[in-house]
Length: 288
Image 1 (tube, rainbow, N blue to C red):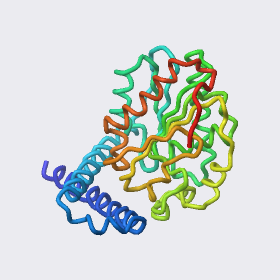
Image 2: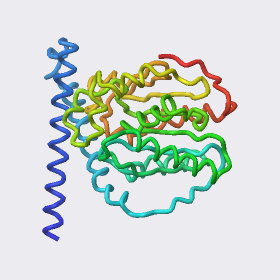
Image 3: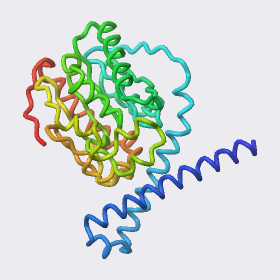
Image 4: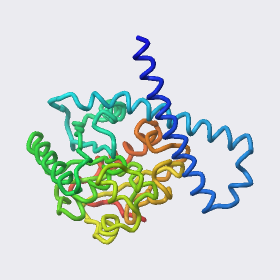
């Protein structure tokens, strides 16, 4: 028992260091862009906001890390329901277990089948990951007898979804793509990533440029939900996607986006709106 408690304490300490370090860098980034923030940093309201922000991110990141082993357990998903299936794509260093609360809420809110999958981000290339997603989509389409699915991708998961739709001719298989905290223009923290795929998140690298230059298919709806207080997507407005319906939140960290009610409600409202429309028609004017 003592050994378990010691391990949990070390894990919590490591998570705390990551959150504190990332928010220190994020604060410097924000202050460099908006120097007037320096005059407000010691105001009680600002300090309370900062403590609450980091405390939430700490709790949710710790919950994600503790749930991580569950993503290694082999599981046959037999999702039931009606309507357009949803496939959830996680980001770097996570696996399908990070979606446990989001998936539960989706099933409570809608009758649509919900799937998730684990991606091996330790590959050297993003293309095999995209191919794995394409195969999963084909399996879901065959199982439910549908033409298209909805994709929700957190962080790098959103970029893989975009790669499939915009660069791999997967638009005929996807109805709506929701990107949650995805660094569309890269992140300045990307050089710290220990996975080979992390180099694709460096600002001005080839992959973000190719995505930005690729046309947005008219038959797919795109939504990008991001937080101005994201501690890993730097600068935060890298979460904005040109040509998509952009939703900016505040007071939420990178991992918090997976769990917070505001992020979920923003996602579900976009999917429910699409449910009311013809799934094979792009019925909403996209805005950047």
